[in-house]
Length: 115
Image (tube, rainbow, N blue to C red; front, side, top):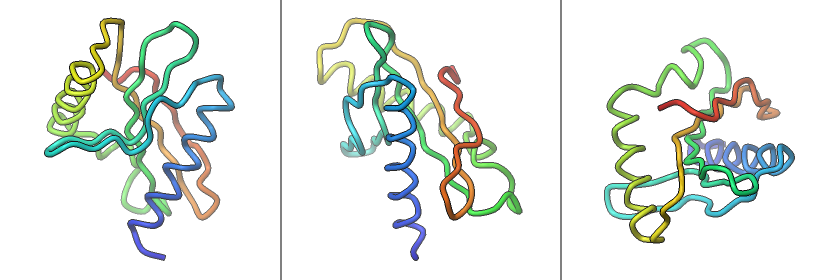
């Protein structure tokens, strides 16, 4: 299986996990030139979460969340602001991350606010 297929499958598993946690999926794989958001969710009338999905087959190279660098956070913020503007959304929002590991795409960490 390619890295792309693993990543795509991990995103689907993450979306299902978030649904089970009571979130509504607003967008999956939202993309614009120079911007992408893996999953956009909201629970009730709470803030919109822009979720970065990080998958690692093993922890040999560190956890997925270790790869959310300041540069990645800036990219996520840029993409979130594009979505907010494009959708004329004026509510609260935050950046979030979910980490999955292994062949069974186990959720090992979910951070609903990484800002």
